Length: 561
Ligand code: ATP
Ligand code: MG
Image (cartoon, rainbow, N blue to C red; front, side):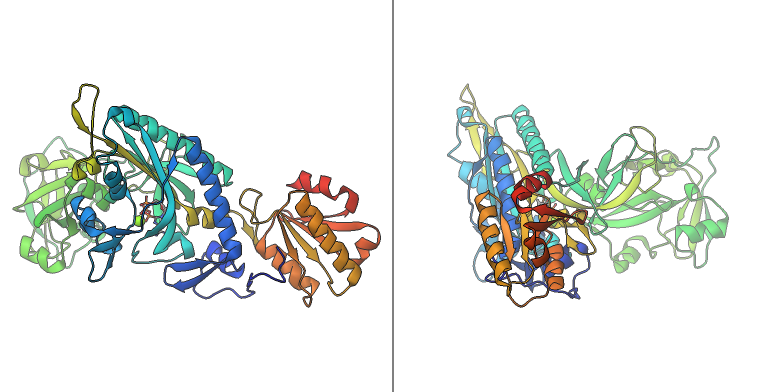
C-alpha cells in the first residue's frame, strides 16, 4: 500500500480526550476516529488489523466445529420481553423509538428463536453456532477509546446440547479455542472465575489482561495461580471472635460518631469488635446487610445471593425504615430481614448502631440476639488477604476483560420453549452455553502491552503490514526507481508492504511515522547505501539497525519476521 495514495492521517499531537496509551496511539496512527461518545470509525489501516483479528478468531472457531451465522442487529422487542432481559439490561439496551424494536447487545434470544422447532431431536445435537458482528450497548460511561464502545464488534458463540455433560464439553472446547486465539494474537492474559451477571447460568470464566485502564478488579495469587474477579473472589480473613462469656447488650451515647473508624477511636476498640450495617431494598422490601468492621458489601455477591431487584436504600428511606440515619443503624430492634457476612458468624460482644442517631449498642451476641440471621459470603476481597488455596498473600489489581465464557444452562430454552426429544421421545429443554470475545479489546489490549515512547510495536500476526518500506528522497530518480522495484519484489515474495513513497516529506518525518505505525520491520532506501547496493533494515521492537546487501535482504527479513 502506497502512503502517497492512501488515507493514513497520522497526528503528532496527543488528542486531549485520550488518556490511555492504546486510545492515544490508535488515534495518532490514523487507525480510528471518534464520531460521538463511544462511537468510532475504523479507518483503513485500523480496519486491516480488525480483519486480522477476525481471521484468527474465525479459524479457531471453525476448528472446534463452529458454524458461522449472521444474526440481525435489529431485534423485535417481544422476544427480549419473553426472557425478561429488557428489564435485566435496563438502560444499556437501545430502543428504537415508537417501534417495538431493540438493538441487540448480545444474541441468546435470536439463537433460541432459530433453534426452536428446528433443532428438535437428540440427533440434531450438539451444535456450535457463532457470528462476528456489531453489538449495541448504551454504556453509561464510554471511555478508553474502543475498549468500551456503544457499538462494538463481538464474536459471540452459542452451544446447544442435550445435557450438562455435553455443555461441559462444549465449554471446554471454547476454553481451548480462546487460549489459542489470544496466544496467536500475542497477548499476555490470564483466566479468572467470574460472576454471570445479566446472562444468568452456573459457571463462567473471564479472559483478562492486567491493566490500570481496566474496569474489572481481580484478586490474584502469584504463588498458586488462583485468580478471580472480586465479584466472586474469596479469601481467608480474620473472623470476628466469639468470647467465652457473652455480655448483655447495652446502649452507649456516641455523639457524632458515624463511621466504624470513628466508633473504634471513640470507644478504643478494635474493628473486629464492630459490625457495620447497610440497608438494601430487595424486590421492594428492606434487608439489613451486616458486615464485619470496615468490610465492604460486594453488591454482585449480594445480587447473586438474593436474586430479583436489589438496590441500596436511599437516605430518606433509611430513616423511615430504621428511625436512624446511616452510621447509627444496627441489628438490634431491626424489624425486617437481616443477613450477615460469614466472618460475623456467631460473634458476640459486638458493637453496632442502635437505630437511634448518636447511639450505639455494645454487648451484642448475634446468636442470642438475632438468631434468624443467615450468613453468606458477602464481602469484597482486598490486597494482602490470604489465598483460599495456599494461604499466600493475594494481590488485587485492575484488568480488562477480553472474553467471557458462560454455562447458561436452560434459562433461555425454558423462557422461549426450546425443547428437543430424547431417544425415548421424552421432551427436554436444550442446554445452552454462550461465549463472547471483544474484537476491539484484542486490538487495544495488544497495543497496551506493546508500545514505547515512539509508537506501536506490532508483531507479525496482527501487524497490518510486515514491512514498512521507506524511500528517503523520492525526488531522487534512482531512489524512486529502486524503491519502487523493491516494493514490487517484496510483494512478489509474499510480504505485506506499506510503502512510504510520499514526495515532499523529510526523512525525519517519515522515520517518526514509521515508528508510530509500528510495523515489525522497516526497510530504508537512501542514497548513500544504495550506491553500494545496500539498504538499511531496522527492527521496530529493539530499534536495531543493520546495513544489508540487497541480494541478502530476503534472508534478513525472514530472520526478523
Ligand atoms: P464488561 O464487564 O467489560 O462490560 P461484559 O461482561 O458486559 O463486559 P460480555 O457481555 O461478556 O461483556 O461480552 C463479551 C465480550 O464483549 C467482553 O468480554 C468484551 O470483550 C466485549 N465487550 C463487552 N462490552 C463491550 C463494550 N462496551 N465495548 C467493547 N467491547 C465490549
Ligand atoms: Mg458490560
